[in-house]
Length: 196
Image 1 (cartoon, rainbow, N blue to C red):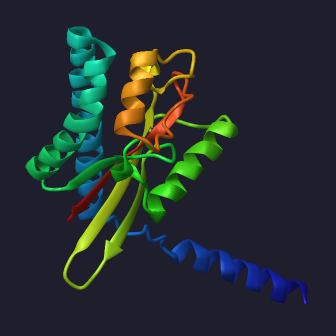
Image 2: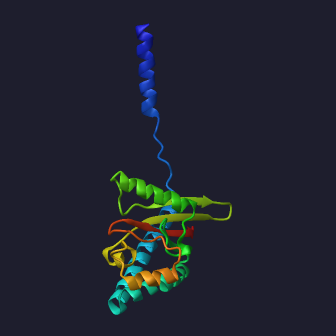
Image 3: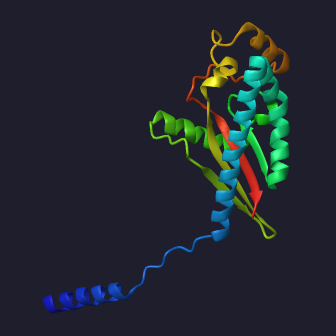
């Protein structure tokens, strides 16, 4: 019995040494699409912030609010066309009705919140999913947007937002939910959809 057991164990070990581990094949096109979409999302937010800060310096918070309400939506459309992808900002606490998240974006926003509560959030986190069809593949990728100090004047607490800004917000956005944020809070996601 002992010899049979030794033979069985030896045979298993020999066979195990002959079996080659197969790595899953990487989808090169998907990896390239993820890099492209992630880079576009980062560049978009950087350029939008530059526009907002310049407008704030030039005309104060009122001018920056006008950029957020008008220019940002147009900039997103222009940028999307230029890059050949659909790009937008979304949030639970949206100010603009155009920034309501879809189901995937809602799930990713909740995941960001859970990660922040668990203290394992990374600002460089990227979420993605792929929609495949016979004709094309679509990558949907999202990156978190964190509130920066300059944005508190329009998105902070009731005490932090000046009266004239509150009035403008109420006129432009009667259903506004984008207040009571502090620097570093999750403001939303920049969301990108692209075919690859």
